[in-house]
Image (cartoon, rainbow, N blue to C red; front, side):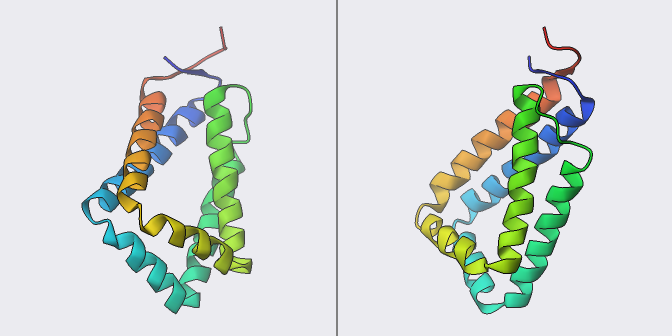
Length: 136
């Protein structure tokens, strides 16, 4: 069982885990979706900008109440939120950096889908079964 200091860490771990789980399942079922997403981003700077704004807003919204580095799960949640905010800023300022990175994943979409499913399940279960109390 995971111990953390805040209930918020547990709920955010569940939410992020569910997101990764859903994204992984969707990509496993339709691996060609990743190529289509990258192609859509190439054709639509407005879409990239909007996704960047959303990613920055969500990452920042998580970081405002949750910038806890007291235990492993809280560190994971905080780092993931920070990475999401940074991803949003990069999509706004220099999207080609991330698009080039995303293209390298297209040929192994099923592998990355499985990674997302496993990590999402682990994060979700850590949040679901964890306890928010003082560390032992």
